[in-house]
Amino acid sequence: MSNPYSLAHLTALGLAPPQLIEAASDAGYQYVGLRLNRTTPNEPLYDLLNDPKLMRETKASLANSGLEVWDIEAARMDPPRDHLHYREFLEAGAELGARHILAQLPDPEKNRAIDRFGSLCEMAKPLNLNVSLEFVSWTETPGLADAAHIVREANRPNASILLDTLHFARSCSSLELLRALPPEWFKWVHVCDAPAHHPPDPEGVIYAARCERLVPGEGGIDIKRILACLPDDIVYALEIPNDASVSKIGFHEHARRAIGETRFHLEDDRVSKKFDAARR
Image 1 (cartoon, rainbow, N blue to C red):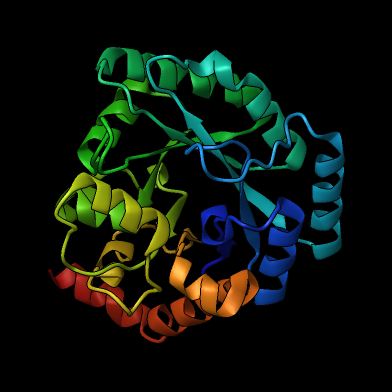
Image 2 (image 1 turned 45 degrees about the vertical axis):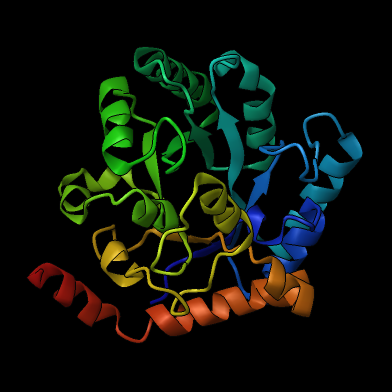
C-alpha cells in the first residue's frame, strides 16, 4: 500500500493556495502543505491570516477536492521573533484543519531556542497541532543531532522532527542516529533528490535547495536508505522546487511529474528496501 503524499507549497510556490490544492488533487496527492508567510523577501505572500476572501476560497477548494492540509509553514523563530509572534499563524492553521506546524530555529542561543520551541508546542497543543522542527543545513539548527537535542530537551508530547532528505544529506547527518531515535518523533518527511556533490559555497547550497531540487532517482541522495529508517506509514511531503522544470512544463505538470516519478522510484521495492537497510 502506498504511503500518503502531500504537495509542499515550495514545489509550486507560484500557485496561490486554492490553485495549489487543485493541482494537488488533479495529480493524486492526499494532502497539501501551505506557506502562510514569507521566508525570503522576494517570494509571493499568500496572507491567509489577514485576507478573509483568500481564506474562504482556500477552504472551499479543500471542500471541493476532498484534500486536507497536512502542514502550514513556517514558524521561524530567530532572535527577534518568539513563539508569540506566531499566535495568529497557529489559529489560521487550526481554521484550515492543518495537522502540523513546520518550525525552524535559526537562533544561536540554544537555551532560548529550546524554550521558544517548547512554548510554541504549548501554544499549539489546545489547537490540536503538532509542531515539527525542521533542521536546515545552513542555519543554527543544521543537523539531525541538533534537532533531536531540542526535541528531547523541550519534552512536549506534540513535538516532532521534520526530516528533509536534502538537508539530511547536506548536513551529513547519521543514519545510525536516525535509527536510534524514537519513531514517534517522525510524522512526515520532505522528499526530494539532488546531485551527490555539495555546492561549494553557502549561497549555492541555498539556491539549490530553493530552485534546483530533483525528483527521486535523478540525483545522488540515497533516499531509500533514509526512508527505510522512518515509520512505514509516514507521509511523504514532496518538496521539489525546480525553476527549470516549471519554466518548461508549468506548475501543474511539475506537481504531477513529482508524484509520478517519486512513486516509480520508491514503491517498486518497498519490502527489499527495508531488508537492505536492516542489513547495513
